[in-house]
Image 1 (cartoon, rainbow, N blue to C red):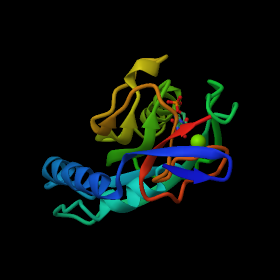
Image 2: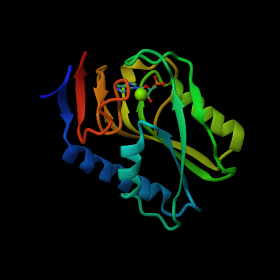
Image 3: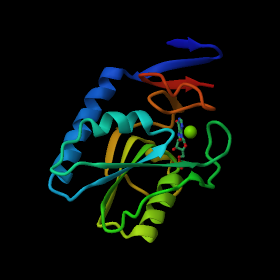
Length: 181
Ligand code: IMP
Ligand code: MG
């Protein structure tokens, strides 16, 4: 248990467990993307920054990867998304007809992921479009969306660390922890 100021945070996945799992996902993605032309990875900020940084260093493909970022957020309280997806940064080069892999921290209600995947389809008609997520909370789903690569499936817990925040805190923790409110 880490008692960080006011919040008790209990480790669920250690840095080592995360690193092992991300290496496995990287292998799987490497196999699927091995011979595709110049894959594009799009990281969704801020939550995916740790996962993306580790994941891309575990991907080997024939062509180099192109890495882009957007920033999306669904404002609401610190632990519940509002359902409205905001797009504070949505600048992308022309990625029409490219093989696109979206990298997200977590699929919770699924609204952010659904919004962004539909946006990319409409805007660019990618040659292929897949999504890799560090975490999946299937029991929370409000809209139908499924990730192609999932690090860990978790119960309906509020988690922080490895990029995930509580009111912009705890993203830097090297492990994933359950936060007790
Ligand atoms: P959505 O509900 O699937 O649209 O998820 C929206 C966003 O809520 C995610 O990208 C995360 O930033 C955030 N989120 C959902 N569950 C958690 C959690 O357990 N901890 C931290 N952030 C979360
Ligand atoms: Mg967040």
